Length: 282
Image 1: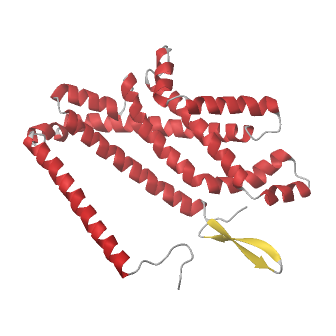
Image 2: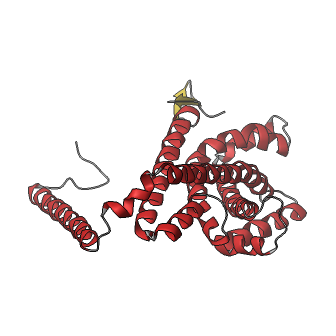
Image 3: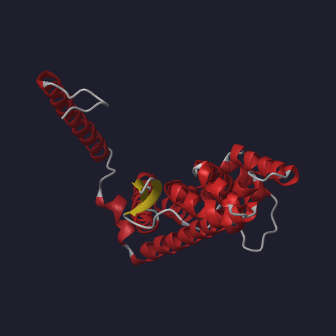
């Protein structure tokens, strides 16, 4: 069976691809081996450099930082989602007094580098929650603006006939948005929402620059005490990777459970949407 999207590789192409794959694997293994050898030669793999991470006091310090990082990320995400929904819908408003302020808000906070935004908020001082507040607020404003664009694009991706049919039966615009467009757009937006949640969690590491409590702050205390900069960076990186993998798996489960795709079937001369693998289109 032929594929119209690409030509099936012949024997020579298959052999060439295998050779390239083997060379790539060998090169990667060689690079990893060279890095490990260099670490060993510099004494970076000695037990003394890694021993602090097995002491109960440092394990507790890292766990406390992990909890604070997850709380900051979760709070920013929970607040950014409704902000993004509101701003995304506002950008589609027919009223200029609503549409233009929303556009300015979204474009401004999307354009400002997140680290600069966090430092600017932190420089204002006087916050009730200390340095955790500037971090969460910066993440909220930035990610809320990004999600606003996701919402706008998701709503525009819904077939125009859906809204036209709703208007034809007498629904007002706010009813069309709430009942028809948003429920379908959410399924389209789910992958982008999940990806942005992972980005927000990783960006909590920027709290390091304002000494906000979290994993990076705990890492700062560890390497200042023991001088093991490389080991601390590796441990924190592994923790962040595990967190992001778990969040990604959770996102995949949510997408399978609530964001099933739809297929279109022709029934009696009429187009009818049928759910596949989950909830169908509303």
